[in-house]
Image (cartoon, rainbow, N blue to C red; front, top):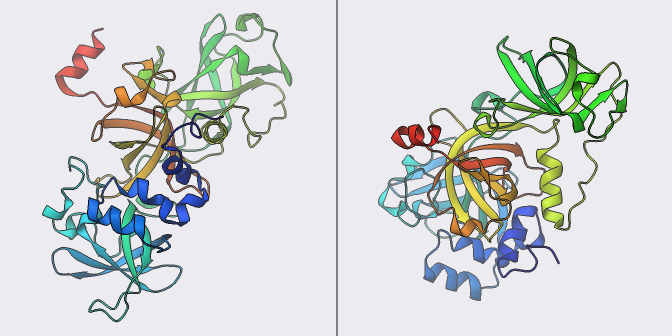
Length: 365
C-alpha cells in the first residue's frame, strides 16, 4: 500500500493528483484550511456537488465581495473575502479583516471550487465560491510570470571542472549569461553508450572539452559547486535514445508521477519564493508560491518530502509535520503540473528561506 493510501489524509491528498475527490464534497477535508466549523458542517451534510472552475474577477460588490465570471460557463459566481488564504504573512482565517481588493484586481484570474447558488438572490449569481485554490495568471501567458526557467534540451557547453565521477558544465543561456550545470558519470554517454560503473570521467572527457546536455533547474545552495542546473543527460558525439515521458518506477504511484514530471527537462519550471499553506501528511504538503514580481499573484505547489531540505539536509525520510509549519517562508523550484492536478505546480525542490543574520549564521556552518 502506498504512503498516501495508508493514511487518513489520503482523500485530501488524492485530490491534488486529479482524483474523483476533487469533484465532490470529499474535498471538505481541504476546505478546512480556510473554512470555519459552520462551513464544514454545511458541506459535510449537504448533497451539493463541488466543481472546480477558473474565472476572472469582473466586479467588486462593496469592501468584502466580488463577482467572478466563470470561463467555461460564462456564468457569475459570488466570491467573499474570507475564502482567501493566499497572501504572505496573513494567518489563515484572518482574511475577513482585509478588503477583497488586497487579494485580487478586476481581471485577476482565480481557480476555485464552487457549488450551485440561488440565482434569484440579490447578487444574481448561479454559483458560490466555496474555496479559492489559487490566484494568478494562466500558464499560457508566461509574459506575466516571474522566475520561469528556459528549457534546457540539446544544449552545448564546455567542461569546466572534473572530479572522479562528477563534473561541471559551463554554458551561456539565452540571454548570454554564464551558467553552470552539475553532471554525473551515471548520466554521461560517449558515442551513445553508457560508460562503465566506477570508471572515472577523465578517461572519456577533459576540462575544456565541448559537451552536450539536457538539464533541469536545481537550487545552487544545495550543491558544493553552486550549480543552478543538473544534467539529466550529458553526452559526446551521438545522443542516446531516451524517453523522458516513461513512468518512473516507485511503490508510491503518486510519487512516481511527481518524479516523472520534475525529472523531465521538457517540463516548464519556475523558481520563486512563497510559504507553506498546509502539511497534508508525513510526506506531502501544499505551498503557495508568488508567480509575479509584485508578489500579488499566488499559485499552489504540491510537494513531497523527497524534494524538501533543511539547511542542505534532505528530508526524504523525515516526518515533515515535525519540520514545517503553516506560514513558513520557503524558496522553491517547481514544474508545471499536468492537466488533472488541482495544484498548478509540482515542486522539485523546496526549503526554508533563511535570510538576514540567520543567513550569515548558516553560511558559516
